Image 1 (cartoon, rainbow, N blue to C red):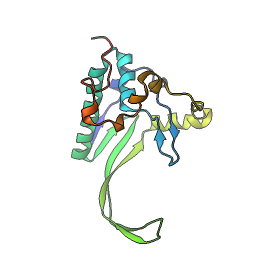
Image 2: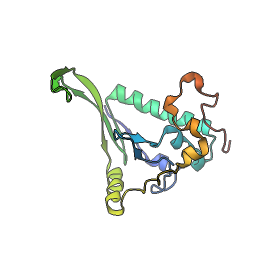
Image 3: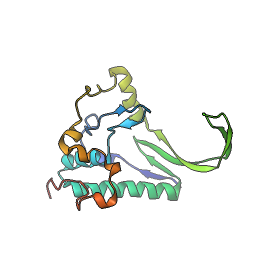
Image 4: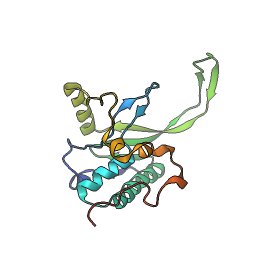
Length: 177
């Protein structure tokens, strides 16, 4: 059975599709990993401003959405989100791989992995980057809006432990209601 969620319902409360500003910058470190990528906190802040809800309430809605997606994927094995893409669990068989440092052959156990195939709208918008070019990186020595407003301690949520968080979890209590 396939779970299908229509993204058009969300579009009625969000801004036009071309203007999401999540305030994350997409620099890469020496290993090619994304540094300063868009975080859940950036998404919460943007949605809260767009629909005039407090960030704490928006954080709960975003987290519940992520939890529901994960639960549905584990239960059903496939999630189709129109205009976004398809998440699917696929089984990878056991195989022999090679350690790149030593050249030694090593066994890799069978495992389940999540795959994602982008939808037509996402593909089209990403292809548009080829035509107009990628967003300009921040000049060296400058910071993103997130680090400039949140301060150095709030720039890396992953370094926090559960005991370090405030009662608000680092989310401001601003907005309407």
